[in-house]
Length: 294
View: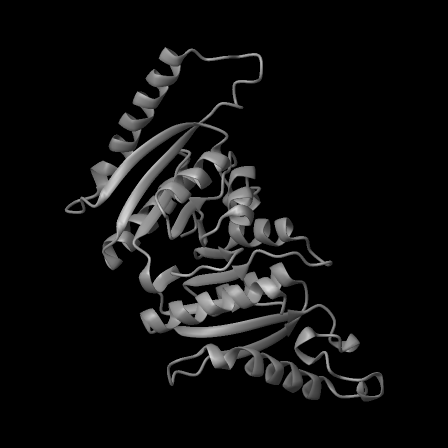
C-alpha cells in the first residue's frame, strides 16, 4: 500500500503518538520509513532532541549539531521499531511546512504522517492547511492515541461533500478498504448551517434531501465498486464535522478519510476547510486527508 512513508516530527508530545502509528504502518506494509525534523534555526541550538546541552556547550559546528539532533531522534524513536528494518533520519533547517512538502515531493513519498500540533513559528492550522492542500500524497494526521490504528482496524469512514477532491479521497478509501479487507462507511452530512439561521427546513424537506444524497452516493461511488460489497451508506443532517465525528464514534471507526474542502479549482491555492481542520483536531482516530493531486 505504501512503499515510502515520511513522518515529520517536532518532538512535541503529540508527535510521540504519531510516531507509534508511523512505525506500525511501516512494519505492517514493509514500507521505508523516513523521520524528518525541520529545525527553524540551527544557529540557536535549541532543538528539543538535544535539550540537555548546556549554555557553555553551544559552540559547535553545524555538522556536530546535525549529528546530535539525529542522535536524539534515534534515541527517542528507535525503540518503536520491532523489525530489523532501519528507519532513516533526516534534519533540515527552514520553515516546517515548506521543507516537509519539498522533501516529500523530492523523495516521492507515498504518505506523510503528522501529529496535529501547534508550533510558535507556524500554528497547527497553518501547517496542516499548507501540507494537506499541496501534498502530492495522502496526509495522515494524528491528534490522539489510537489503540488499534493500522494493525487491527476494520472500519474506515469516508466523509464526502461531493466535491471533486472528495472523488480522489473516495478512490483512496475504497482501494484501502478493499486491500485490507475491512468495512467502508460512506458518509455525508447535510449542512444545516449553509442555508442560514433564518431558513428552517421541514422534516419532509430534510428527508427528501437525505434521499437525494443517498442516490447521489450510489451514482458517484457505489457504481465504481466492482466486487466490493462490504460497505454501507449514511446521511445525517447537522454541522458536518460534528456529525462526521459522531458517526465515527458510533461505528467505532478506526480511520477517517476525507478531502480538504475547496471551491477553488486549483487545489494548490485552496484553503483547508473548517470541516477537515476540525475533524483532524478533534478526532479520536487517525484522519487521512486526500487532495486532487493524488
